[in-house]
Image 1 (tube, rainbow, N blue to C red):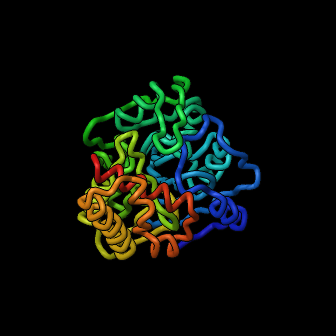
Image 2 (image 1 turned 135 degrees about the vertical axis):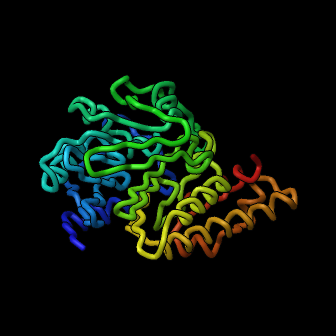
Length: 305
């Protein structure tokens, strides 16, 4: 496996400072001047790129490049530079796995280069209409038209270039209401977006269709497509395989079942927080008090839907 690792300490410091709840970012995004790109070869001309924001998957074809997620706008030149070292073909498609700014922030700049952005229709609706965050109360306005995906779909879609096919599939009410996962069958690679996020509690964007039950269903779908050699690119965190994905599913099921018991007992949200149902998981994931409280709130909201 080929690895090009640059700026590892800077990335580690950034991740350590990242809040447990991923917030929709402004169109520009944070300073990326000290961040460089790590590229991992997944085989069959397919790569995972790590930088600032969500993980990126890149599939090279004979006549172009398919890209999954574009991080923040501030990473645009660095991502293009990393991809140019892999292929002299243009980026043809950029798939948004969901609407959050650390995955869609690059839409406008890539679009100006002629890249066709693609997403589930609900992603376009969020970017065009604005959204609210129930955890923080923050309201985000509609973005400029350049950020809107140019092609949308509702259930499934196929992107084809010469020698490559990307299968896009919508997973309902998981991380958000507009999640897409991308399957590159020829490379045995699945790109999940933030339905899978490692090293911290994942985000359930329950004010925008997220639900832990849907996340479990989505992961079941990834497992059904996978085998012992499948490479799974999560929205955040390191590359994993079927074994680690199974462990992640077990974690989600544990979280769901513990909260279902509290809800069945008639506990309010504040009573559920006070019960500390995930104290052992707080330790495992290094969650501070706010991250722990937010995780309880997200899972509780899922059980009340």
